[in-house]
Image 1 (cartoon, rainbow, N blue to C red):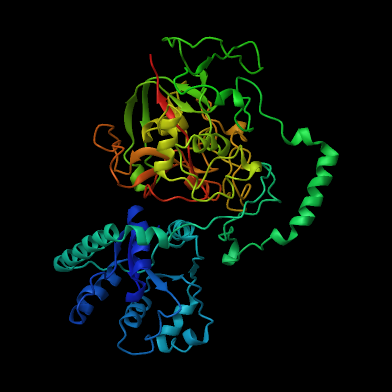
Image 2: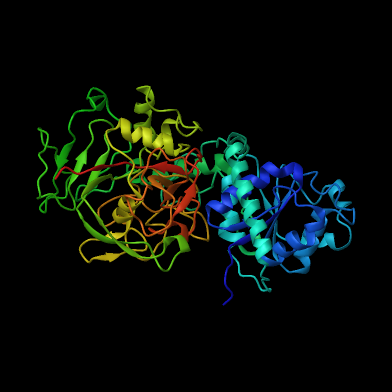
Length: 542
């Protein structure tokens, strides 16, 4: 089986350098070895540097804007020569369509002369305004995730040195143009898609323009024009089965969850009030009752014990101290090697932080409003995870709530570890997945096509009784994105470092590979999107 290479050449017109930097930034954050001519290599070195790098890399990403091919009909045009070299070398060519570029434009068609006309045969990736990160994820998940059936040619030591110089120059340019790039890739505010039942596949329509692709790369039709008919059908269903049957909470062993906004009782409490301890019982399946006095934690604490935060109403579950196996040798390279980590006991939120919870922090004047507010301000989404939040927003909220963001190790243990059997799970509940366990993209269709209320999947809890650690929304953790093995003392938990932070767990628009318990995503801490959320954690006081 041919190996999937993570080597990329970016081809672009000089005026589109901001787009090239944005693509370079994303791909390097995903550990791709990327080259593009940032400093403008002299024409005399074209053959040595440019051509040899195209031949040395598996993937050729071509950035196309409406004027990118304006000089491409000139025989000596650099962009034309790069494309013709990639065609001759049988590279995996991926055209990126930006700013409404289309091969059907008359001005573009006139430039596609000779061998250049072959570029139209390649399956391009359209990048609508406001959906850059979604497009980049699709680029890495699908377009670059293919083997190359052609020869990869090595380059000389001198060329490798020049490649490194170009990469250093590009990294410096990213730092100098950080605000420009962030504005360029700023996500669009989505029109809210009304909350859907967790298992209603037929009504599922993703708000993103990146709909599930099926055979032949065809796109699913946009079903939103039929919203009225769907509404009539829903009313009929409600009449037959009753409203209550559609909104039953999962009950038993302390798993009863509420998706309603926080009550005024919590608003009157102070941040210094101790959380209330809830102790699981063996003889009753009704929700456990809260003690009237603050608990005194003891060594008797174990799996199944929970706290309820008086600050935001979050149920927090206990994870006992001990070792677990972190990482995977069957996933991506950055999940390796598998190694043993010993953690002290801690508490972690049972669900993702909701819009209703987050709104209390905003009202207190501590938290920023989410970058996109159409979900946040829609009362129907009160019990859904808050999205459009940066890493800084998430860390700020957790501090306000008297907690903190979990470390990457804490998140993975709560998601993957079976304490009883001392084994690791691919998914929080086990090693198989379907739409009854989580909200994700099952390859045939999206399970839902948007976020679901937290706690909607009782079958999908982890062995520590934590919900939604696979799918729904990616979750920020405190850790910087650094190679394994994980060491909490090596600087990766420094809250003041501006480097990329880790997202965990995948989201509703990601396939089964991207909702595994060991998957890691590296993202700028100031980035946000309509599928980025978080949960908090805190130290135990044993």
